[in-house]
Image 1 (cartoon, rainbow, N blue to C red):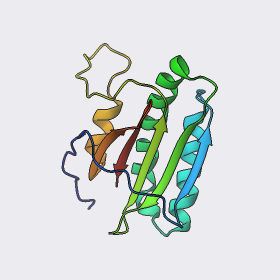
Image 2 (image 1 turned 60 degrees about the horizontal axis):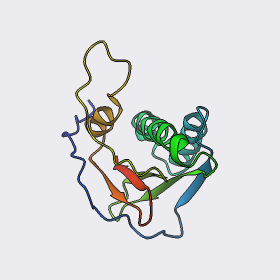
Image 3 (image 1 turned 90 degrees about the horizontal axis):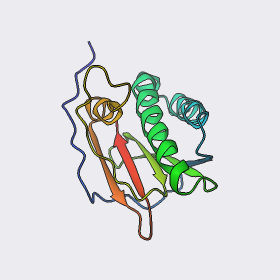
Length: 147
């Protein structure tokens, strides 16, 4: 039986680690197909790392983060790509990061049952062991989740 993760929080200002030699990066345009490219990227990397048991959760997380970033990013910097980073924590857990140039910081919402959006970050925090975001100096932010 899969252990149910505890609900993660979305703190402000948690550190985004410096790039490491085994980190992989993907740059995608802020378009609707960006989430599909990011899912393929994450799925292949986790399978290569022998972490197939985390793929389903990772695909939900990266889909939500990239979809949010693409939507926000298109309004502010439509020609600048979004960056997806897949890294391993010191404990060997996958960490998915999505960096965009939108000045809007993420916020958890309580969407009504009739709203078509507004649940993405709730899904991410329900799946992730940890999640958060950090403003990027100048403009934008990195939103991350550890599985």
